[in-house]
Length: 443
Image (tube, rainbow, N blue to C red; front, side, top):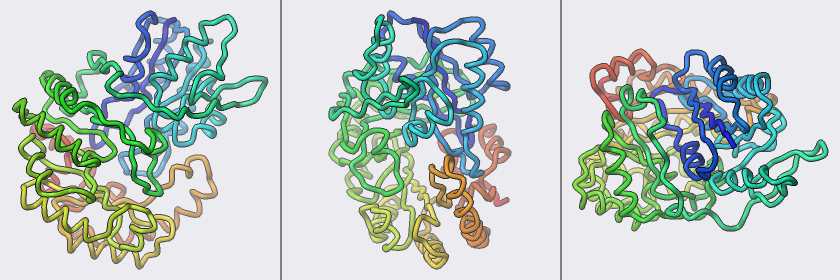
């Protein structure tokens, strides 16, 4: 079977992100199939490119990876839904091949997206095993689609779901993704690689989709194999930074420390960053991270109010955020804290108190966002109700951020816009650009 894998993500601000999910599914697809990879990230006219590729290659199946529902560069609250709809319609117009949807964005609201986009199949959550089993069934004279886990499909005009399996994949059993198919622009323009050291998240943050996408149980890779992959992919020309894409790198801490020790043993010199949680962050881990090449960390602090953190089920209080920031400062790790204000149940008083907290904390960088529920993409009434409150929150953030040299407010363009980022890139700055936030003038 000839399969076209399409990475639909086109966002590249502040950075273009390697479509590691699609690459993992491709790698797990048996080699008896012919695999084509079409990445739309850097295409000037993506729909024309897809139409031309469909005519030229005539695939038997089209698999589309949907990374996000909202545009994750935070500069607006528009969704990607219209672009995804246009992509599916283009495939329909130029090919009779069935369409399979998957990816993190799809897995958040799979039922709604199957209805809205009209795909033939959809796989929610981990796709490596499920996609291969779908291919096996489609090759049979009479497919038994109910045997494919996590699958949405249509029969007799009805949309059906086969359900989730209790067991999750053993990550070390999966083949490594083939990065040779990627555009050189990911490296020449941005210089950032990425890898996972584990999947799954045991935390219970009310808004987070990681447990939905990856499961609630952490499944760790062998730290030595992680370090081997790290060193191999960072040997590629123009790779100057690596981002560990785990939901939280330091949970469990023993695994994070083991990965760091393996990188130290290999003499790693490539700078890297990761997501870190204030829980279980200590001096030993900070020291190991620095010795292993870490230059900074991104922290989902979210609020400066203990009652809001409790409502969000973050699992920590503001004292833990303060402790993490102090440890980071001691060890020379740059800490970038994201604060998602205006979540469900918050008032403008909570917002002001959180802004007071950020000023007091004084981290290396703070990125200030206002909550957008993914379901707003498919629920216009919810989107309307949230819009006025969101604007009031942004008014307060903008007023306070103007005098803070290391606060970034993407939606308001405060130390976050493509022109400034392009200048930083031309000056040779690589890796996450928040690390250079002190060099970006307000605007």
